[in-house]
Image (cartoon, rainbow, N blue to C red; front, side, top):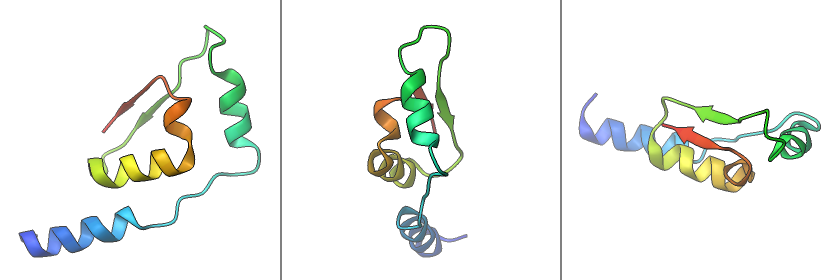
Length: 68
């Protein structure tokens, strides 16, 4: 993949839809700070794409750490 193709791909995945199922956000939020449960996101996506999705979803505020 050349640079131009990668940049096009990167912009596409940054703007892709992300979604949450039912009450998953509320469940994860309720576990935050309970002490026994640590929550992490692990992804092989680009940092720019994942940062945007995590911030937009609100998950960044309830995760203990993110590994991109």
